Image (cartoon, rainbow, N blue to C red; front, side, top):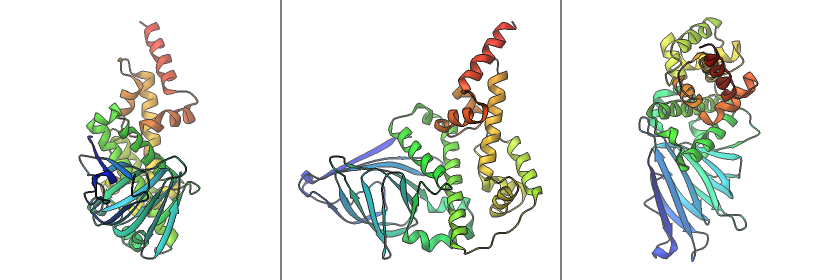
Length: 330
């Protein structure tokens, strides 16, 4: 993915940024320091789904914007972010996030001390979300997201989404070589959609707008059979649900009821088990990362610690021991 960078500064003679490469339209813009203001936006867009992952650096600014085509996650890394939409006020800092659906809003980026404001940004095309997520959940949470939702790291259900967005933005801005692999990027796209879908599902439950529907263990059995047969593909819950003939919502509830986990979490564990077996038995010169990618792992940054939590050792240790065994048996 290529990174598109744009710089705005007061020395240009105009205190605006109407050509933003992040949002649909900028209605108004002001730097906090009208004499020495600077804003930089860096953005990369995935090829298949058109998800935008970016980073904003600023000396401090206020922007009145309209976003018509995306749902947005804003994750401050330095400084604080204040926002107002439909008379609803929000404020968040590091380890927190603001989530918006399509709307018009005013945001203020506030630097603290000598540190400039910095935030990661992820934008999901609304047409992609409508095609891949539970339509009823999206409809039920639409008004809430138009006003904006504040997310905190104390909310355990939202942590995976926030952590992955931060990790992915850092990987892109640092030019990670793994992002040059098309299949890996597609896996990342699938995981992002998956995590956002889980966030929407839980937000829907919290609003109390829908009644939970019980689901049978047979859904879980069929889904897990399909997962095992397609572990190396960038699967989503929507695709799994369609393959076994149930709604995405019913499948999510079934897994929560039977496995006390989301389908994505079970899929990740299955892939981890497959990687474990491959690390022990593969007799080629393939490295740990190569094997993980071949097994469908999308979040390489989380993979090693996840593996260590489950198997009590680093994946490289498993691989090294297996190679020594293969060499000794020759």
